Length: 412
Image (cartoon, rainbow, N blue to C red; front, side):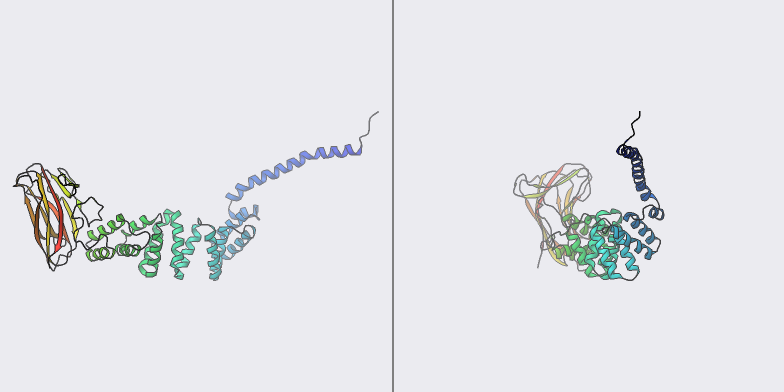
């Protein structure tokens, strides 16, 4: 005789029979959620919003699409929906700010965009908008700060932002002061920006202003940066500007006409300092004298054939009479060749003074003094080159000669 199942057993069996169905439904739902993520991410926003109308990310993307299409009112509406679900959504806040600006509510737009920029240093669009807005307001400090944030991340935007910096500084002295403040922080883009100014039509004038402005900050022009500026002014024959910058900065001090006439081994800021010749058959060094170690000097080894300049330096003498003096010592060498210290006008290439050292003498154990008169004319000689050159070259022989204590002094 069969046993009739109790009600409890019937209920338990029903529950046991339903759990596979529930599991299958759960797996199907989970699978749909997994598939929904790439669909929502990759699908066009009009389709994605139908698949996930409550997603803050989808609403934000749809808002950006509407903004690009020029539908600013719809973009603002979608951005508000996105922010209601994710209040810290930077992209949605940026779109809403642009929508407010389009509607003429510039104050609210500025506050929203500022907040978006503060929330994310990586949102290039927000910082670009803020730069433009601050420039219109004349708020250069804020505009340049946002520009700094932008160019630290986006090297591809640097040419555009550098042009903005330069244009603003050239047109408004207030902008120049804020640009100096940015450069005084030694940002990673400083060298690249300064180099870009050499390719700008009026870049040298702006560079000179920056050099003067940065001198009293914690990051003045380095010797390398200043040398690049000096050389550009010198090669462009902008002597008045070169003299103004050098005299104002005092680098190197203008009190001494000739820099490093002792030929000490020290860093030079060309063209104010010794530019030494390099080439076959010559060697020009700043050394201590082997007979008097306390004396520093210029030692020249020459093969009597190479005719190139051996040492040169730019000087800025006013019209008048001067004395060029120094000491020399011949270590070895004899023949028809020799050397000469010359002073030459930069503009006309006229040699206004020369003193020669012929090798018709024996090697010297002691130093011998020399001097010559230099007359700087009133016209056409605002800058001069002091240079050491070989003379009567051609027949090979070994020559070693020393020079020291070279000086240029004005004669009252």
